[in-house]
Each structure stands twice: as C-alpha cells, then as structure tokens.
Image (spheres, rainbow, N blue to C red):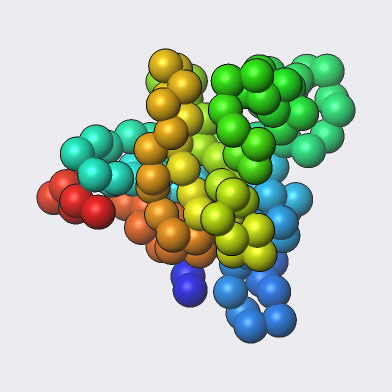
Length: 138
C-alpha cells in the first residue's frame, strides 16, 4: 500500500510489511494533512483536512484526539474513535465495533450520522486524490 500523499510531507514510517498502519501513521504525521486529501464515499465527496494530534499541546488542543473523543463520545456508539477532521469540521474515525483488530474508517457528520468511508485505514489512504478524479461510489 502506498501512502504517497503523506510520504511527500515526511519520511516514511511503515510497519513490518512495508504498509502504513493507523497507529504508526497517527504518531508520525499528527497535525499534518495529506497532499492529496479528497475522498469519496457513496454519493459524497469530502476533504481530509488534518490528522488529529496525540500530544497535549495547548496550542493544538483543537486538533487533539482526546478532545475530539470527548466531543463525540456522548453521540456515537462505543468503538468509534476519531483520528482526523474534514474541512467541514466532521470527524474521520476508526470503527472498531465489527472487527477490533481491523477497524473500518467512517465519517461522523455534524448531525452525528455515521457513514462508511473505507474498509481499512490503508484503503482510505490509498483512495485519497486531488479532487480532479471522477466521483467513485462505494
């Protein structure tokens, strides 16, 4: 799997298989945005704006995973954990409910609707594009 959008912004951090995994990418690229950041899911298109941070830095608290989790927790089922935000303030999340060892990627809208985005973090990152591609339904 290629993480070309993020690999152009920082040095590569891969797991033992040479693939980018969610924990490693979250630590390595926190607070950053991929170069190609548009994603399609179903009938909608959105922009992956920022990978949330793990640090407790007050200046970046708005982008903190802990803060995002506190905001979402009362409104979503257990097993949904944020890792990113869209340009519209919606949250990209890992969905551990069905398969804790292989979380899916979902979008939690401002109305707290949960929409499927990708079957894995690797698939999500591989699907990012610059917005010029025709819309792909999933």
